[in-house]
Image (cartoon, rainbow, N blue to C red):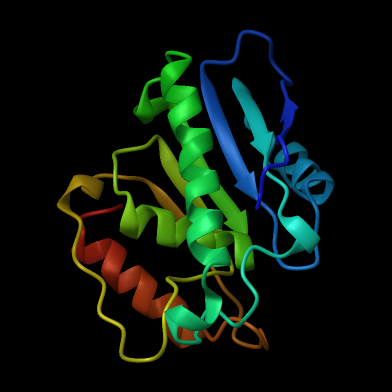
Length: 177
């Protein structure tokens, strides 16, 4: 599951940082490539992972965790494998940017929660931590100082703003900026 190699885009051959940008449900890595171009961040090499059937896990990110297994664990392992591969290439963790859109942002947030490490930053475009209402995520002090860009919309039908605010509170409790 999720064995597709990511698209690898190097707008700057002398890139000092690597970004991993995860697509949303029903989307594709090519769309994330367009988002990366629009961000206009120089000095980044980008990786764009691809989910099987354009979905990382089958149910809502608010469903009980077991309803999204085993795909959720496989998706997290896939993203962690990309990070491990970069570390093995000699890219320090503090030069890796992790991000995503919608389902991809939820997956990126969950990777931060389950496999916390001090990265260069996180870009969470309309997403939040995964789990049903009432889920408590452990505070992760290793994220202290991590720059995070977190967005939402008051009218998003898939990602309730309340969950994004919960994610913001968790990030703040963990010390992220």
